[in-house]
Length: 202
Image (cartoon, rainbow, N blue to C red; front, side, top):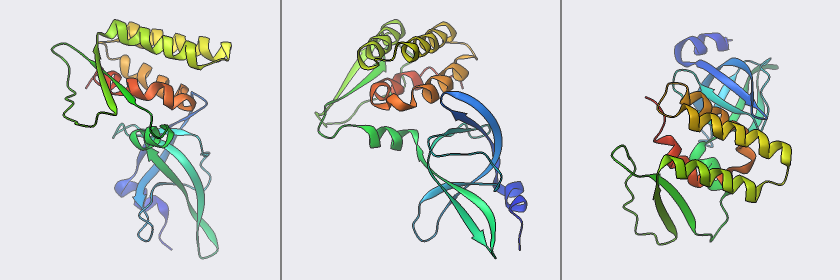
């Protein structure tokens, strides 16, 4: 039987694993897609600590995936790999949006803006704002939408980290921490993701 390691060497990469907003490990994974269902998954070694609800980030690709389900792939009576079925950030956001609700998307204004809205869909409102206003809006959304004081305080600190690190190389780390920590509140943060993505340092 062909070992999973040979496939990992050819097409795998290292992934950071985030659970409950904290990085818990770095693991090897192989992005793939099932032929029959066309469902996307990342293949992991059988002993890998990976669970539904985890977020992973490719260290090479910088892809962010939400692990939706885990299944063991059996070959000749042995577990060949763990399949981590995932959603992309956009897919995760869509799955959490309320049907029929007017979507508000925040976009950075100014010379560095890289998002163009050419949609004629009137259910989408695009609001241009400065970075300072953006972070204030995020804090307001958390204040109005999160009742747990400890969680609210933690998320506010992460927002402060992003604000203080904008235009620096450390912003990407703060952004990743923000996305993973606020994953349970995607309906609150999804309108801000386009604007925050513009601030990611290439």
